[in-house]
Length: 178
Image (cartoon, rainbow, N blue to C red; front, side):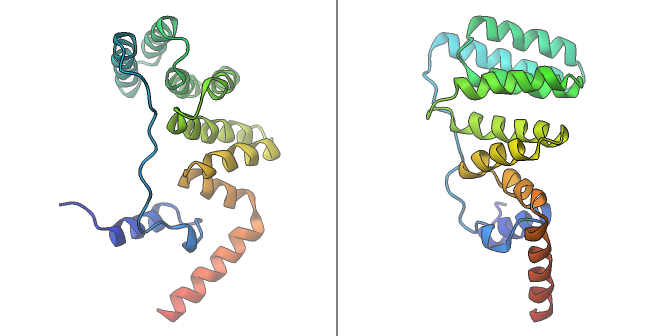
């Protein structure tokens, strides 16, 4: 059974409690996608990428990293490979390497890579925030939010204590009205 728009909006509020109510999309726009040519090399590296992600999910992070690096050697211009590599590096607690990888990923992104760009900006924003570089974190979260990332929007609110207080007060008022 598919969820209706109202159900999706409720779940968005539950999982993103700091997101302002007016930011909750009842009818979300089409999901971001990367537009890549369907070449044999892209298909081959996508399969390697999927396998690397599977290995990472099984906790075999070094094997996953080696596999994603082999895909990068085959197709160094595919930004999603770098984005997924950065995830793996973060799980390995190699934050500086992850940051450099994300910076390269973002540089490789074009208008055809909006999904990867959104994810990479949000991920790099988290690394900036972790390193207490809040101005840079805000810039990356703003870019990801422009592309539609609700996670980035909630992070922007977390970085703005006044917005968080206003949002909390608004929720209290709305709760009392209901």
